Picture 1 (cartoon, rainbow over the protein chains, first blue to last red):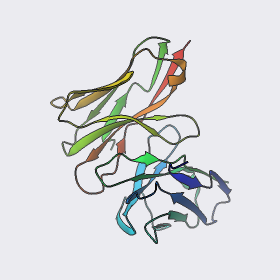
Picture 2 (cartoon, rainbow over the protein chains, first blue to last red):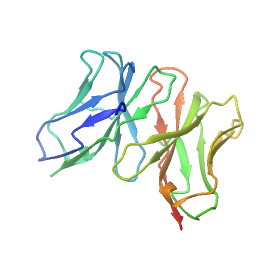
Picture 3 (cartoon, chains in turn red, orange):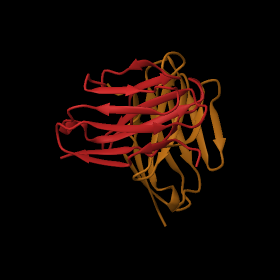
Length: 113
Length: 113
């Protein structure tokens, strides 16, 4: 399978714990995006990388969230001190460059107890 | 503020019928308009996309109609099949910057056999 891969698919944690998600984009895709999708809504942009550089963050990305793409390949999204409102599907997408279609992974569903 | 408005919220169509989903936008900086299909527990999958230099694009049973002056675009699914039952999202992105996608709120399509 050469699509976007996300791990884990599901994460259940207690409020206040830290969680980390991983995204492996399509090989040689320079752009990597993180989106958040809540029930019954469309995905909302969180942040994106051009190779290893994080170039933009949305206002949705509070200071409890941090993302990395250390070698320009896979990326991680960490949420510290999780809150109930963080419960959502976290989606990763990649594209060859900024003007090409974005291909999504199947997401990580986060549930906060 | 929802940058892309989508309707209807839900749609029920008989097998073999035509499904039509509409979207509207205000930001004239948008220049790329994709449609995504999402099944439960899966990430959005790109169906078809259009740029504003054409008024219509067809791929198999899926057609996008684009009206630049009205800032509206729509998805037509011809000969709808039960396997088309899913949630459909329109989206838009700008020419410059992050090129991140702004999604509509989704349309849940049910095709009755």
